[in-house]
View 1 (cartoon, rainbow over the protein chains, first blue to last red):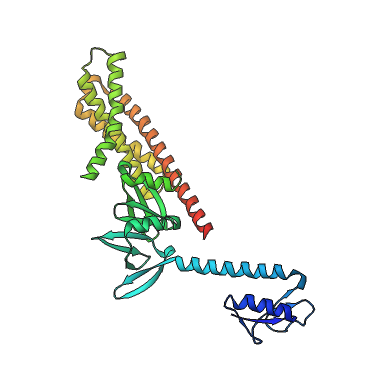
View 2 (tube, chains in turn red, purple; view 1 turned 90 degrees about the horizontal axis):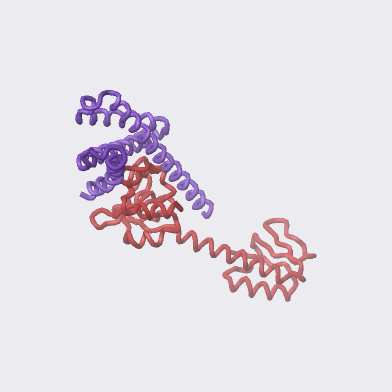
Length: 185
Length: 140
């Protein structure tokens, strides 16, 4: 990203070092300008006017913004996994996955209209995606809580889940306890 | 096989209520009664009432999501099944129709209680589901 600096020399040097160390490019054509109070504010683009006495606050503000951006970027990078559809590989967002199902030792991720093959094991997905709202419901399936439309208490201590894709899956008796715990019951 | 085992596990608690009633009858009401026969018959009644009630409530909720219909279904299903059981056991011949009606009335009260608790469970499950979904959406 490009930044224009409009300030006296000591602040120029300080801000230049700070920004360049964080992959910013100092350019006179930049849309974003850091302007020292009293200097002329450019007519175009976005300007942040700072008071020289509060330079430490400006740096701290910039640092926080950059940290937030990095965290957001990292988070968005973690919100998906790679699935194989025929010969192609596609990025699948967790929120689009309705169910993980094991069939003949192969794990599939089911979205509204697609069925991807994924390389992760069911127990890995169960552990890693619990915080994302995924919970194991029987020996071969993990469901995304966000895609459950309704829970029906079913026969013999089991539960029936109606999903948003109009399919139904059963929580087996042996996993019903864990499922209830997950819901805070 | 697993489902059959689950079915037996489910049937036992309902049947055991019948066994307790058989002991109660033998100790406090009719010490001359045949305990083994009473246990068998009451176990059968308990199992039928418990199982039919659960099936009726689950099925009605699954099909209609209506609590009112689930109460009606349980009344109907339990009434019919216990009535048929009483006819098979020859209760009306041994004790008369009044006994049959009394047993059916008791059955219906038990069945409605089971339906009430099943419906409560249905409501609590879905409330918890919605609150969990809200938490997860809020975190995003």
